[in-house]
Amino acid sequence: LKKLANPRKAEVTTIHLKNVTLSGDPIVVTVLVWTDLSVPTVGWDIPLAGWASIDIPVHEIFRGVLPGIEDGADPLGLGADGPALRAAHSGKPVEPWDDECAAQDLGGNRARGYITIEVVGGGTIFAEVSRLSQRGKYGETVPLVHVESGNGGSEPLGSTWGARYSRTSKDQSWVVVWRETPGGQRFTCGAPEELDWYPLEQTQIVGFEADGTPMEIPEGGSTVSAFPAATGLYKIGAGELSLPFKSGWVYFNLNYGGEVKSSYVESVQYLGSGRRRGRSQAVMFTSACDSN
Image (tube, rainbow, N blue to C red; front, top):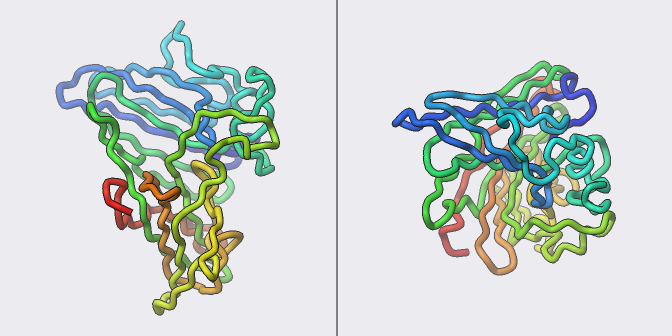
């Protein structure tokens, strides 16, 4: 998620890339930006000399500035068209795409989606992401999700997860969820049902109180789309994740359609009315290499 209005007064997100290839050789990385419905919007290559590093301020991308791109290089997709990128990631009509849409329109002035970074032709990178809130006066730096790749493609991520939560008068818990989707499809604005995979369902969600008391979400186990898009930020204890417990943990089986699917879950804890925040990877129980 990225707030589009006055980002320097809200939360500034910066990706830090380092070339840690042992030989010290230069490498090229491809940055690709996706909406929350898995539509790629812009991509470009960044050359990195041996042992070099670069910062990518995410808000600059939505201003039409592509950090690290070589002079004269031709970016993919919407390129440096800032207004079109902002529209594409906030679920609004995208003029260069015949006013089609590429993301959920959830209201508000936020861009939603995710970014993938791939090493081209071999090499190794280390990457982190920093988030600095001017308003909340907090900062954090965590590693990006690192995925190894080879001739057979990228390694699978998790498929079932566990995340703790706390819901008191001052504490709040959220989860950031990414899910494997077919992706790549634009649609008529206001009609995301045109996508043949949206909304995504899941196999099971179970909330546990701290004493171990379980409750299936929703009660009775009926099918819901708690995480309908490729990625999103969801509050535990609200909406499709409603549960009566004050603290405990939640089990997520994010496989769907009778198939094992890659996913990733990160837990976010706001403590003391948002003045402090902690973020950590949820616990992965099984990977997409395992059977359902």
